[in-house]
Length: 501
Length: 134
Image 1 (tube, rainbow over the protein chains, first blue to last red):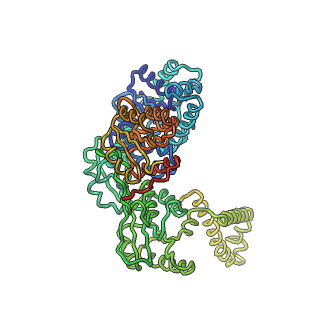
Image 2 (cartoon, each protein chain N blue to C red; image 1 turned 60 degrees about the horizontal axis):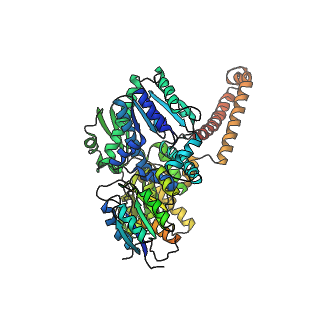
Image 3 (cartoon, chains in turn orange, cyan; image 1 turned 135 degrees about the vertical axis):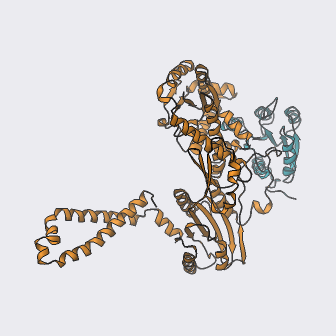
């Protein structure tokens, strides 16, 4: 029988419908509250995520790691309970936790507005105006939650198998109708759907173990699995974790084998001043997302006082620690407002995105810079910009170019400035025009060739060729490079437009 | 208006008061700490605090009820809710009932000090420091 996911809004009747359905079907019932309680018991403060949605949408970006931990706990809780038998789950959009699992019935409950308003007024003891505002705000918060947590629009009805509108339908009758639908063969488990659920469970359990073990809690690890084989990918700066990972995941149920691999795609970003809200951050982050790469930050001050590279650490993800009552220690004064807080914020933003390859600061000559770059790390790209900020613009450009040329030999990877990176990632107006012109010329050329086939064949091997055989050679020598250049330009622009690197 | 800001902290976990009292005293607050709602409400009846910081999940009387009682007695008092079990529903309910702000645990004392500084400013109180003064 399927796992029935009932999604609804607070005070909208969805929870009562889900409970009634579970009772009628004789299934176990699980709701979001229980999942959140388990996450809290595990030390994952889901409340931080919830309040971030109410207060500061911008804070969400810094909550990605916390979100992933919550998702792992939610997935594991649902899969474990569903594996033990049939299940009805009530939540906001829980079915998105099990993509690829076929035996899932996805139900959306639309409340009866007047009844919902009365319920809010009565249960929360709120006057009508405040109750109306409460409903508007909570609905917007939950839409934002689903967007942030599952990256989907909860109003998109294509994501559900069934929408139940409680305006006319009573809860009892809606539950009776859902009972019949839940028993349809379309939603029955198959060996493939059961296996898909087991894979989800294995990955979720592995993520929880790694998140809760203090040795790996703040590491940037990617977890994949296939047929019981777990593959954990770590960034080069965390290579020392490789031997610990099998230890942490040792006796994980359902795991046949553990493989640890280092991320093979890494981007080194060298600048003097970093900002997480800058265009360069967005460009580098976008590229890292496409490549699945880790981004290593290196803050380089050419004119600064000579010093060895200093690693910069980021505060760990929020976690409920026993014995503190939820009141953490204050930050030391220096850390609270240091001169390099924008560098730390950039690093933190990457950590929360799960794409941090670490961060260092270094000052002095080129030897200091070179000393801070590890040759054992397989860099795929180096981004160099915003250096020598105390120099005049012309000198800054020249010195940055010289440094880039020097690094090309040392790192053996392409070196790009921010402007180069932007032009490589995005189609500019000039490029669009160039691609359009190339397209038109290619079409004209092919039209000319196919419309004048007889004459062309004559030149290449017919009467005309007999009279002047050298003309064919000249024609091929001239046309082949022209066509390849035009075609190449066109394809390069098309690939960039399709975001294929 | 007094030089220091009067703050009542209510949380059934004694460690919360022990950690928050010195952290708030450093920025110019006179802090009274309570671990049970009844004596805290009794004290609120006796004295109008400028700020009340209360946990939400407590036995007998929850923080929302404390908020309602404070708002009924002293509408000018700024109530800041703190909880380890925050949800958007509870946060919105608290804000609808007049809470000044809502903080999810775990938090750093500075986060609370920032909210208290804003609350003090809205009360027209100028004596609060944004960062601790030793």
